[in-house]
Image 1 (cartoon, helix red, strand yellow):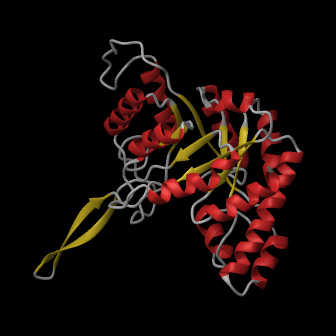
Image 2: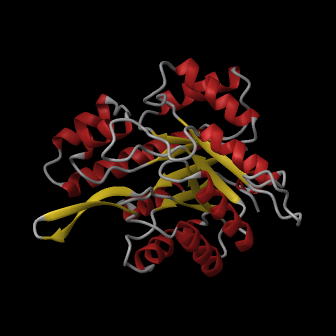
Length: 315
């Protein structure tokens, strides 16, 4: 069942969450523990992130270093397959532009199709850590990636050759930004691009994390006025560390309401910050449910136990 179909059939506000693949050399234990912890809340799907390669310097001896490309969290496709096989929960692997060639994207699509995984989240992804701006190795924008997936769905490979079998089609969502994308000149432009994504086939949009529900509601209203009718799934994250008061706004370009920020400033330990984060996220979630939002999506990185406590409070 696709993401959108699962939302339509849900009898209450749906629950989903995002996982990171383990670091290279580690097993699935942490992934399984996270799923086991949150399984009781009936997740309608699980997102699995994809991570680009980064350039690192490796010592070769005699005081010399070589610059090599290294992917620290490989295995998105395999992990998605393992989760779907073990837990019988729909999985949504991320397909990104960043650090991937068009050919690598095509190979990933072929692998996923063989595995019967046909729900995707299409994203541009972040710039490399060592770059000042995003430098494409394949597609420059998520909408270009979307064109490739659409052509694949029509039965055509990159080289223009046609597939010989009529295989299941991919269905996908894409990202949106209640506080606008950091590279967008204004909100109207950002919504214009969101509408392009939907018009070209995105069945739903999932938001960047936010901490002010009013910004989400305002964004949704503007999207509806622009003719965007697909579900806009709110992305929530309970804070767990004191330094996230400044780290999250810096990295994700999001605002923390002063009411929340002032509570975090009072915290003397990460444990206190975790409690404040759970309380705020629970308040957000309850308000969203009260306003008939069809689904809540949680970013669980370093926050699995917090997500569990929020879910216990709202489901």
